[in-house]
Structures are given as C-alpha cells and as structure tokens.
Length: 300
Image: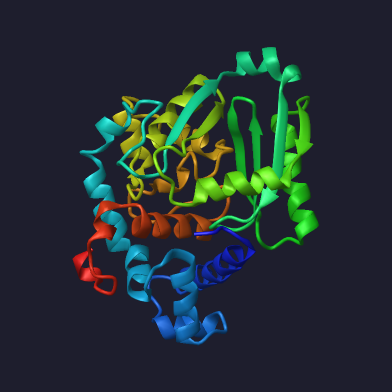
C-alpha cells in the first residue's frame, strides 16, 4: 500500500465518521446514518473504508464496540507479563512491523544535545498528516496534525513542540526523507525493514514506553493493568502522565491504553485518531483478522 495524500484524505472522512459515532453516545448509529453524517452514500463510505484499511463496514463497527474492547482487556491480563519483559530488538509476531529501540535519559540528553543534528519533515500517514524527526541514532519524534488547522498553522504548531523538546539541536528539513520513512512505518513491512527509534525521557517514562512497545498489535490494556504488571499497582496516574509525555505517536503505542471500563479514554492526538489506530491494527495486524470472514463479525 502506498501512503500518499489520498490516504490522508480518506482518514479525514474516517475521523468524521468516528466523531459522529462518539456524538451519538451509547446508541450506536447504523451505517447508513454514519454515511449520511459525512455526506456520502453508503457505497462511497464503504469504498473509503476499503481503500483506507481494507475493512468492511461490519468489521469497522465491530472493532469500535465496547464489548470488543472489554474482551481485549479481559484477554490482556495473561499477556502482560510476557510483554513487559520484551526485548528491545523484539519483532512481535513474525512478519509484523519490526521495531528496535534505544533510550536517552535526561542526563544523556543534557550532555549531548548541542551536538545532535535532527532531520525532520512532513508527510501523509494512515492517520493524517504527520511530522517525523530523526537523529543519526534513529527516529525520535512522530506527531500528528490536529486536522482542524490550516496547513501552515498545523505545521507551525508541530514544529514548536519539536523545538521545545530539542531546543538547541541543529534542525534540517527534508520532506522527501520524511515521506519515505513514513511509508516504511505505515506500510506492512517485511522483517528486514526494521524501524529503530530513540526514546527520550526519564527512567520511569522509558520503563512505561518499553512495556507499551512490548504489547502485541491489537492488544489493549488499562492503566491499572499495566501498573500492576510493572509491579507499581498504586501508580496508575504516573503511568498516565508518562503516556501523555510520549512524543512518538503510533510507534510507542499509547493508543492501546484504554480505561478499565472499556471506554477509549483520552489521547494526545485526539480520541478519533486513537479509535482509528485501534480499528486499523485489529483488522490488519492481529492473527484473528487474518483467517476470518470479512463480513462476519461474530466469528472475529
């Protein structure tokens, strides 16, 4: 799949649909109501979902259901012990997106920041336009546009955040390389296409982020579950703060954290984007999605 501007436009329509579903509250709307809300025919919205995530309306709505999220939370308790001990060169299931990482503590950053060169650029992704930044050691920043800003305003906001995190680093814009890296991140990669990231934070934040990276795609956990698995059961709020400080969207999969009651909860780059990531992963990266009927949610 080629990640281009058309995919970002498809995501914008998906985000509108998700916002409408949220606004309806506990009564889930029908697919024809969703299509009408985004000013499309049912057939046109079905094509958007197929092009964006190769997903049918039935599966789309199934993965958004609260029952599905509660099932995932119930299943996660037995999986968390393994994930919190993940190897930093771990690949998860064979054939999935490969990810390796290294960390930089606050002291290391303070000692080396003036010597760090950062490349950055903007490009499309499966979840809207994004800012990507990298050092010679690996990808260090991935943030998404709010979507309701003009292009210039959105870029200025994202660049201000990057500058605040790396105030004296030497920055150079390279949209061509950013586009190529985003293509690798959001395409289905082979094992040889490893993505390497740099985690920049406190020791506690890095501990939380490494645990999240160890989660399997499609797996969802609550703040309390993760705190318990890391043997810090009274630190759910601190876990939430570490998640809010994440500046590597999607790569550090904070979108997989939901509330214990099954509600989605907040997300740094917007709840609709979080929902879209959960749906996309559930359909494209989990074992259960591979061998089931495309239009039969009861079998998923």
